[in-house]
Image (cartoon, rainbow, N blue to C red; front, side, top):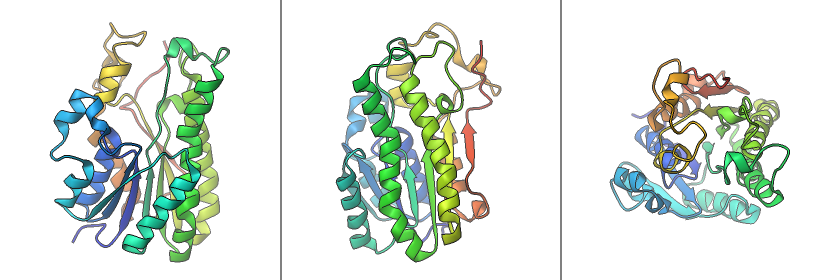
Length: 270
């Protein structure tokens, strides 16, 4: 028997990288998983992500373990998010776990400093991260309240815990900080209904996308980022998936309103 047998999970942004790792971890524990993404084959954008796949999609990978459905949607579209939750209910009749992973950043740190933020990037990244998280929670909360149970995991970032030295990527950091504080409110709102809400804040995690797009173009591209980490290594998707396992199983039944940084003890100051 798996810890999550007979449970139903939704993982957004699960076509690749961290979201895929979360979805596979929950499936390995016995959960049925709704894999959602704006493109269920988005892994094709990055060579390392494509190489990691063991089937044509995360959905097919999970169907070899348990049950999965794939739903393409944009978390910025509130109606699409509501339709996704309705489809999950029509398929399995319950929703026990929500992992709000979809999001990310756009633009370069040097072009997104706090005092010179481009309005279009600000709106896009805020909608992808903060609004998308709220929309997903709004869609599943009524179901969880009726069940008197549920576990919600939101995703912040170390960028949401403290600023970069030069004030770059401010739109992303501020959106992730908003998610963290929203989760604290969420825990208070949903606690009386038997629902937990917690947040994770990943550090530098070596997904295919991060390795291909963030590291080479960063101001620290010629330095070893692991030197800033107490454990002297960068994180893996499994490092994060293990914490998601904790927050979605009975191991965390008395944990809510918390943020767990998964950064290996990273120091962001100079």
